[in-house]
Length: 153
Length: 153
Image 1 (cartoon, rainbow over the protein chains, first blue to last red):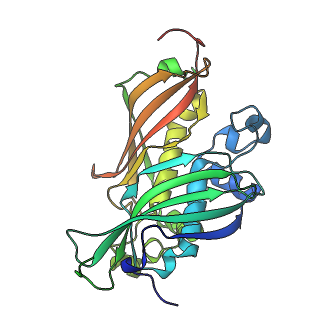
Image 2 (spheres, rainbow over the protein chains, first blue to last red):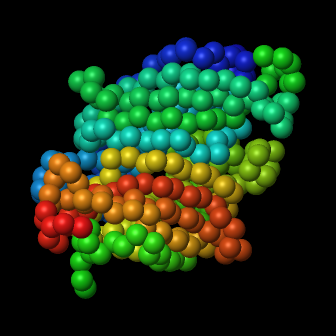
Image 3 (cartoon, rainbow over the protein chains, first blue to last red):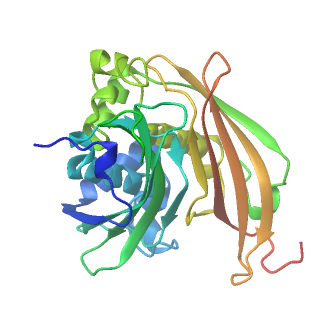
């Protein structure tokens, strides 16, 4: 399998990955450990909350999205990590039984000024449920190794 | 214990929580499930990465921060959830054995225009290791129930 380098990420390109099933068990397991608010643990409490029924922690959504990114392309790339996230929006609850798909859009790709062996790719990620409704979005820059260190863009 | 309402969050106020020990086992357990990049799983691979040694997934850092927020004050509040995150910065690796502390600063508090029973509080969160080095920051708005729905600020 060809490994993806910085040069392979072309602004404007999109890709789709999934579906990924989300279970009630994993929603609760994540919430118990990292976000034990009643609306993420208990159906009755969740019914009375803005979620209107059991929904995953937003951070669990981020974890699921990250795993889909890893399986989708990141583990076959020269990924060097990321320094942060520009924005996360939790649009709709992620429910038990949801089958999520991920759409990746490459917003921008630029060589690093300080490191000739590195480039920065800005991505927009959008996650959808099986009804095609957006459940979350994220914009984030990530660092990748270059095939041709120091070459002009 | 007095439950925290929107009116109890005063801009400029700060609080500190922790410490929270992070173990190698939980770093690897999280990474296996949500971010299986070699630098989050394997010491030798991590040594060769920008992390310079095994470090937690940034998303694990977010989960740990969320749990510290829950235990610190959110579970004793009228929290109604959050619609997203404005910004996350991963400043330094979170290492096995780190004892993390969390500083919370209230940036802003404003009544909801559409829901008189709700207010929005914007927080800045900063997490530090035992050396006092910043490991991550986050800015996020969260929704809380009001003690006096519809009262003037």
